[in-house]
Amino acid sequence: MKITISACVLILATATCFAQKPAWVNDEFRSGDYPRSKYLTGYAVNTGANSTSFAAELKASAKSELIEGIMVSVSSAKTMQKSERAGVFTEDYTASSATFANADINGLKIEYYYDAPSRTGMAFAWADKAEVKGFYSATIAMAIQRADAMLQDGYNAEVENNKSRAKKEYETALALLQTLALPQSLLIAIDGGDTPAAQSALAQKLLSEARSAVSRMQSAIKVCVIAKEDNFGQPVSLLSPKLKAELSNHGCSFTENKAEADWLLYITASTRKGSDVDGIFFAYLDAETSLIEQRTGREIYRNAFTDIKGGGLDYTRAGLKAYNGGLQNIVAQLVKNIEK
Image 1 (tube, rainbow, N blue to C red):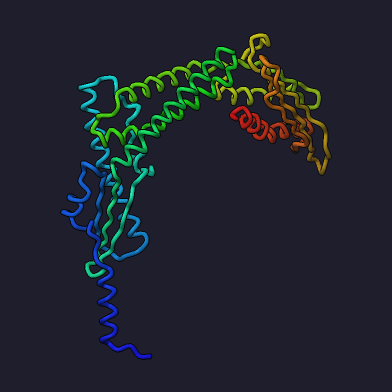
Image 2 (image 1 turned 90 degrees about the vertical axis):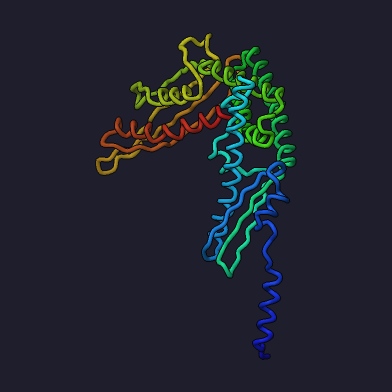
């Protein structure tokens, strides 16, 4: 079936009719229907060939403009609050532009339109301030409630001398409170600094408490290491220094007095001979680690490692190679379990 030129023109005209520009491309429409008093907005326009990457870049630009507007509002509010309510607003709850740029703001919508005749692409980003405020106000309230409970649980555990549990509760509470930078800044941007004073003060108080508690718990857990390591009967100290270093990185200190220790770390390791092939000697390491919480007698962690192979010009060197070959995995397994 042949399609006449007039039919083609009709089809093209119909398609053009249905591809009308959205109203938001008009500046006056955006100002009237999306006033900054009610919406967070961003708009971007550029010329070029229409493509997926072109559209993505324009959408990102529109979001970036919206973000810049938020940052200006936050900066302005911060200045005002420093002069009017010194101490209520601090740097702790000012999100950086990088944090915003990578965040998914709840309720954010982005539309894209491409005008083929002028080879112009346009993107419009917006979010209803009332919706954003409602969502993030609830988010902050819930986070404050959870963090407060965690800090209380941590304190109770600390009183009971359960330092490992206390440390975990405090660190979790601190991490949760630090996530409030984005929602707090969004509320500041929306309200121009008029955020609920009680909520801001409580969040700040809890953040300060969490930081102090975490700092207090640093090196609070004392560990006594009882190690028996040998390489073909000769005493060595290879696993214990590495394990102590990793535990130190996780807030532990060390004592040689068992009575003072919160945890007891037992390490046993020894090598045995393997084959001798063309002057290359092989050895095998067998090791076992056990971590005991002394207060309860509970074994926090136990693991056994066998047949860790090493080779060298003699059995002594082969044994040392076996130790070196097993170090990383033995340490990693212990750290993995104490972080649970």
